[in-house]
Image 1 (cartoon, protein in one colour):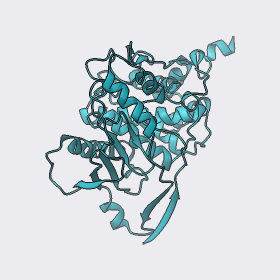
Image 2 (tube, protein in one colour; image 1 turned 180 degrees about the vertical axis):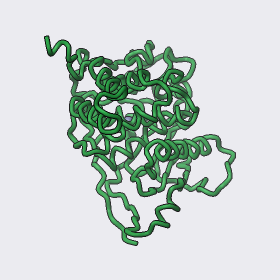
Image 3 (cartoon, helix red, strand yellow; image 1 turned 45 degrees about the vertical axis):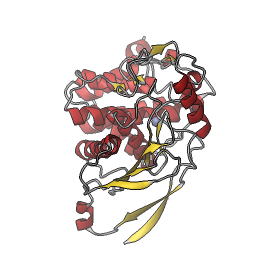
Length: 363
Ligand SMILES: [Zn+2]
């Protein structure tokens, strides 16, 4: 057994599920005073120092160990409303459920993501080598976010007025762990188009985690991210809609969902790391359209194509067009260039304006 040290990409930025622009807007709310104060505190607290080094133990030769590791190894800790990580361990892999619902939800969410990765992609945890899955709940006071810090999932309780706790949403948990998968594969930089791809792939893994756990088809799925985290006081269904970007919420206090669903509406901005949570709507819609066109369970064909593109040599600075080309190549390799799958992938990227319509190009 040898121990290797893996350099995580050093994000100088907040990767929470709730974008900074939403919190900034909420911080000015007079209608929701508790949420406004919580948003201000969440913005001030930001995120804890990023753990840039991650220790992984890899057995170079043992097949037996590789098999044994094909089961999740989960630990949930409780920060007890402080911002100290990791907090006290409250549930380990072999422990029975505890009284604290947030602990059990986090535990189950980690397991659901592990199951999706294994069943759909034969991937053994985030690093494909059985990395332990760790989470901390009750981070901070009224903390309005959930994030992946490069090593663990961290959940705030939400302010209760606008945001409920974040452990109740499988798409949020799958999204954050999806960042862990990206970190261990293409390592997409968190800025501009590659950053929006990073966000989008995290949303894909989040949506697929929820759909797999529910046994949902692409047609039946909501394609919403964070469907369960907004309170009834908010005019909105979720944080994002993958199938209809820009329609997730429209609220006097929260503002309007700014996501585009087509390249003609691409948002050029210095905010949000160049719009990583905004322009992710474009590749998100390409994925949802592909899955809807193919029907059945999205993780089986559309999901596999996206995963192969992510893990097939994609660079850290890939653009939308690079990723579109990678998915088209992955579909052709897996199913044939003239297959229904390859056609669906090509059509989807054309529909969102990332690739040209071949008929127009010919004319
Ligand atoms: Zn994210």
